[in-house]
Image (cartoon, rainbow, N blue to C red; front, side, top):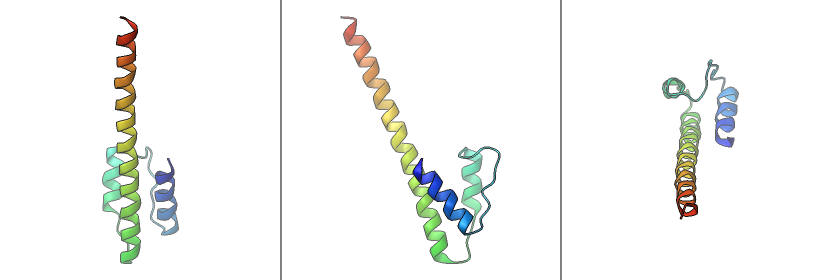
Length: 80
């Protein structure tokens, strides 16, 4: 996902360490929430990237739910 890549690249450029065994879990999200930056603009950018990742994940969940519903509807209509 592009948003995740951008977040990691920004953090690396700002020298914030994101090295974790398993990325993008709830534990990783808690870890990200604790990162702070000296410059306010860096913090704002980091929050914006985190928001973009969250919104992309939510969008993907909506797409998957919609696909599952329409797949189920197609299967039921083909039984008639």
